Image (cartoon, rainbow, N blue to C red; front, side):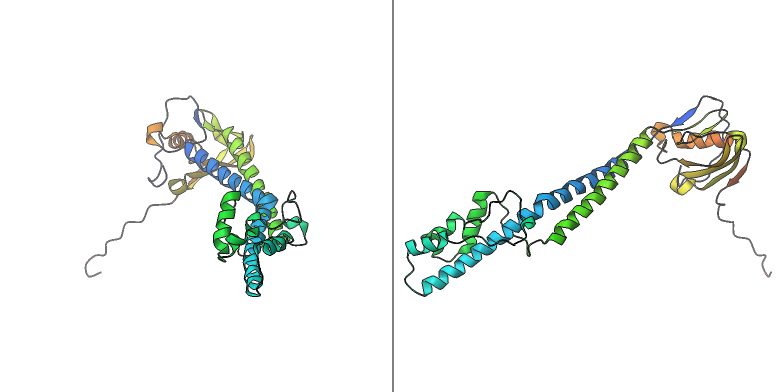
Length: 281
């Protein structure tokens, strides 16, 4: 078990295979990563397809409310402003949107007249356009907080780029999850089978590297013989695990391998004991 110290080889009387399957620890991490990139993909897709465009509508409507209040104050200050004249003026106005049609939703009907609430002389007279804005957005089910600046084509394109990146990472996470679920590491009385399906007889094993076993649950087996030449990676945290309540499958697997291994073993030596210096030496 990582951090517990070196492994003591134990001769296993049971010659049945020890099979280490993907651990719950790995599955939880893999699913969490998959969900994270999946959620990011959805959010960036929404922003790139409609979200930023809808926020642009909110921004320009908010500017319209501010501008309508300024126009009302200017016309009222000049004298002669009546409910009919203000209504006639407001009816001729439209919300100003950018010329680039791609910056607003495709289904938005343009030109868009001023919202009806801005045509009301009595409601405009107190010059409290922020209160009218809150009323309007509540009625329309809109976000009352506009963005500080409208989103341009570059910002919208960035959302698509990040969406495709997150989608690719989601696909990669799903691939590794499904692939790992179908894999196991096992050891029987004749050899070891790695997660990729490679089977190596014990007689072909040349080196067992345990320098990361105690800290990261990783071991590496170099082999060379009738089974070919290569390296097996034993990941105890991904396959089997070290939980005592589950019988420490990865630990038992490694004990089985060591009990039948006759090659070179690489592992960190413990700290050397301090030497005693004779008095007066």
